[in-house]
Length: 187
Image 1 (cartoon, rainbow, N blue to C red):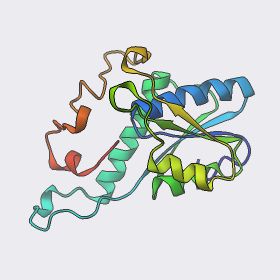
Image 2: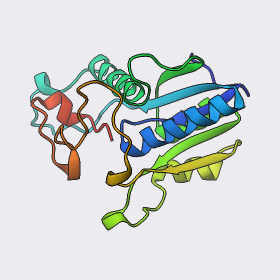
Image 3: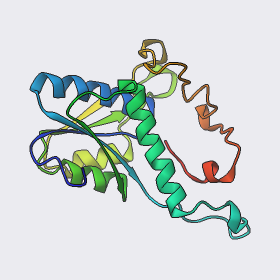
Image 4: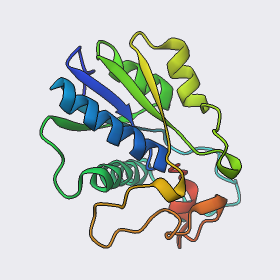
């Protein structure tokens, strides 16, 4: 699906974070209750600003970056739905600034859902930059879904799934083994 939701359903922004998975779970329940389609959208932008001394061979191509973004979208959808997404669910990968892409995809939708990450020491965090832009400029209602506390998170539905913490992404620490993964911020 390359267009916007056109009044048919609910659009939800996903970026692989616990907050976006919470927003997707919330949106699934709402879409089911309202009997409308669900559009999970992941926006990505080609990475720029590599260090001039970085070897060209370690810089990811646009195609590699697009592939990585598609992997993030697919992994987020699988984390919420398991191997088979619910009927009426569409995943959209779109290139561009996240807020712009979400606003465009949500034009004419019933609503737009975005996640809000946990704050420091369990305190609620303010809405992030993308959420603020969506709240400020959206022509449809925007729902901001808080990420559950670590103790409240539902178990991952995928068999043998690992959390981002287990994968080494927690607290800004990265254990990715190649420069391509380090060059793309998937949070």
